[in-house]
Image 1 (cartoon, rainbow, N blue to C red):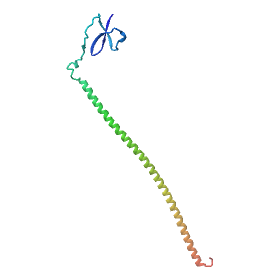
Image 2: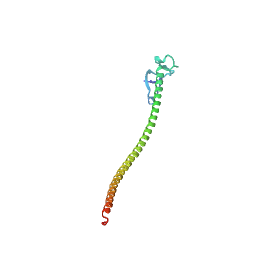
Image 3: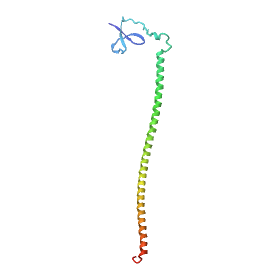
Image 4: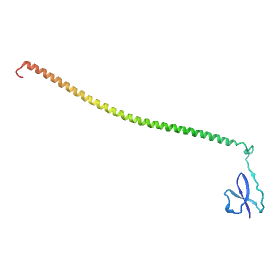
Length: 156
């Protein structure tokens, strides 16, 4: 049985295929027998009711799709700007954290130094108090000695 092969396209065309080894994937068998006569190619136009108004105009759904794509692109651009701002802010936050750590370390050193100075000041104050006591005792002993010397000059 000699059969034609048909390609599925917007224009339906039938052509004889002598060798089944060279079939295209989108070809299907037609049920029209070929008696060997060459017929002119027939084109069949398929169009949906929405496409019949004019071939020059785009369907409404295409315009809606383009509008949605534009909206999507605008949103992507905004997201890119937000990403850029977040990256910039993140870099600034990292820099602030590093600077805060440096300042925290410096403050800790200042606190340690202040504590050391305070401890040394307390030691100096304690030492001064001891010196004042010794000085008073020396004055008191030296005053008593003078008075003893005055009373008994021969003992010295």
